[in-house]
Amino acid sequence: MKATVFVIVACAVFVSLVGCSSAPEDTSPNPAQCRAERFAPPFHELDPCSAEAVLIAAVSTIFGYRPREHADPRAAFRAAYLLLDPRFAQAAEPVALVWAPITAECWQRWQQEGIEIATTVRVTSDDHPIDTATTVDRVLVVELEPVDHTRIEFAVYAHAQRVSAGSAWLLSGMEART
Image (cartoon, rainbow, N blue to C red; front, side, top):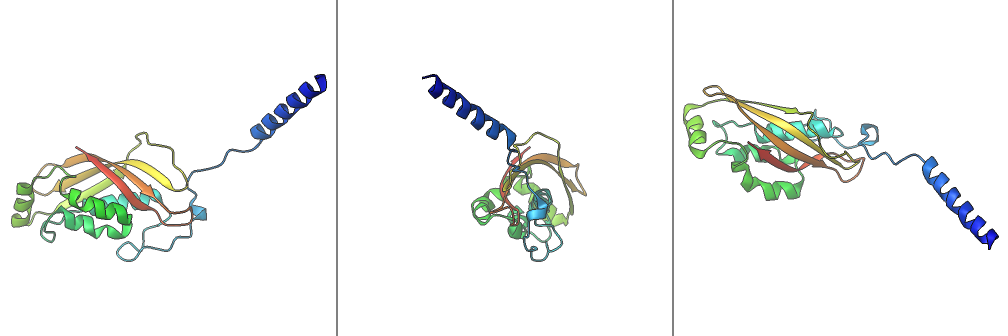
């Protein structure tokens, strides 16, 4: 009986020592492992292995409103398609009309008057879920500055995904809060 207890205790000690001595798996994104092909123009200079760079570029494009050229905010959204997960792009395009705090009347006035909009996007230091090799979440601040109006600022909660550690990041989810 004592021998059986000794073997069980010895096995338990061995398993716990082996479990404690191994290094935890690193799940953070590692750009060195990424061998993703570059995006097509106009995003060909963007690093597809940088989740934050892809999120900033995608959100900047989505809110890169050009009322003289765009029929409505969905046109700006469509300009970001290369940086979007296809499922997200298909599901989210109709919602693009209501993400920013801009009314249809305001958009029409901007179109009629040829108002230009400067768009700035930056990553905040707000808390976000832990990055993994294939998912990254960030809180971004979007600033729209129409030449005839005061600055409009709102937060965007953005989610990026990639198929594997070696593939390009894509915007796969977004929620705007005004």
